[in-house]
Amino acid sequence: MLLHVPRVLDAAQVADFRKRLATAGWTDGRITAGFQSARAKNNLQLPESDPVARELSAAVRKALDRSPLFFAAALPRHVFTPLFNRYKEGSGFGDHVDNAIRYEQAGQPVRTDLSATLFLSAPEEYDGGELAIGTTCGTQRIKLPAGDLVLYSATTVHRVEAITRGERLASFFWIQSLVRDDGGRSLLFDLDVAIQKLNQDHAGHASAVKLVGVYHNLLRRWSEL
Image (cartoon, rainbow, N blue to C red; front, side):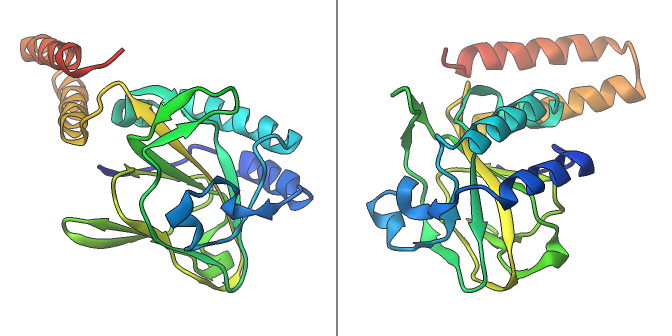
């Protein structure tokens, strides 16, 4: 799965995030990297315990709760605490795969089925800095408007290209889905979108009820609680 989720944050929210992050206590981004990833990682990160990080993380989670597209695609069972990173000129993050299991501060394990990057810098503010994700169709380079999010499988090899001008701010996090299998999750998402379109074009169509039943029966079969 590779999905663009627009307008998770509006312009006013992005501006507020940027203002708060400008004076935050940034530190070495390798604090959350595994052994292999740490060798490729060169950025700054806001510690999870930082008061600004805690407040903004809660705001990101509330914004996700208001996004039906995010929910339909991710089917979240648990969203790992959103973190924040900063790439300055000359910094980047080489090819890596995210750790399969992350641990919240309270020690709760989270299986990383999906990864997410919420862009907080506008594309014109920096050169380089694309999120490059390996897919079966080749490498996809992602650089979205501020406030938009990209959702992708955590199993993929990906990187952040080196910044050659400006600065790139983002929030990043992982999701443990109700449906572990990426293929099954993608089929459910496609079915959900098709049902919504059918209801828009042919309100009250009898087939919609049957398709909703198929959706929920598949979800019942594939979900893990």
